[in-house]
Length: 312
Image (cartoon, rainbow, N blue to C red; front, side, top):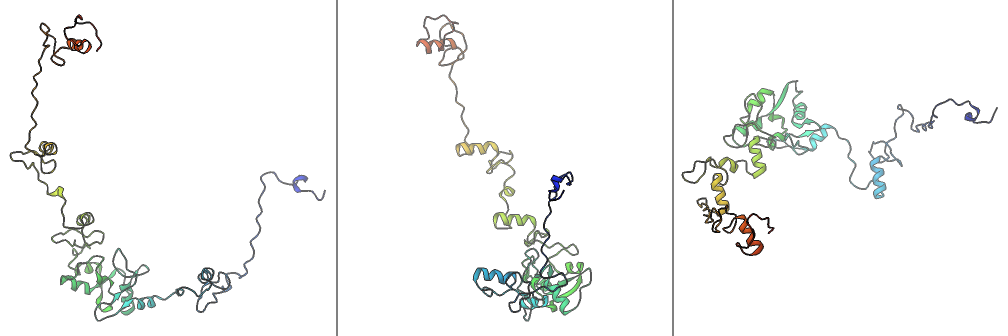
């Protein structure tokens, strides 16, 4: 039987139907061995995206109406060209004006230090396990002109005459700002031998003080408070504001640590004041029964038998 659907004819197999997707269109630019067309703008060698332009020039045309509008397209430069473009040469240090790592303070191109690139360019390759030492930094540190840390300008120096090839231990021992052989930079606070923390120039303790108070030398009031109460002849432990807990409470309530609260003396009787009644006192000098009589009838001697339940 011809002309019938496969489902109607019973030729279809059991199970869910399979979705047949159309085959992709062939690549009009050929295979991987065919050269890709490049942008038609001047020296731009980027691949074509649309209208004969690369993605950058095409977006400029869509946004500004001119593929050449705006700032020039950054053309990929070699590492040597980037070095020459951001190095300010002088009689002393050659300052790097490009990207500087906020963590270490060294100039970088990608993930490589600029001082290492300049050493390899002008002197030679750096062996495995060796490092580059800034001699200009060591001289300034010995003279007391440099405090080190990630803000040290000598870390941006890339003058090959100021760089020497040393081991890691020799690099640490060369500067007076480090513990010899342990790689720990000293805190910038005088008489503090703790290691440098977070490349801020201070140890962890002084760094917290600097963040909290704005002064690394400021000491918390908790560290300067007395151990005992400041009131004479009181040896109780300090609690607050220079006083023990008792005197601090007096200052808070009366404003004077020496004020002692006088207990009010009570003149109330122990028993009921009604003649012949020996019950314990409750209120207004009467026992509970006479007080209820007074509240109910207005007279403690009202003719109500004692012991009768009377509501107030």
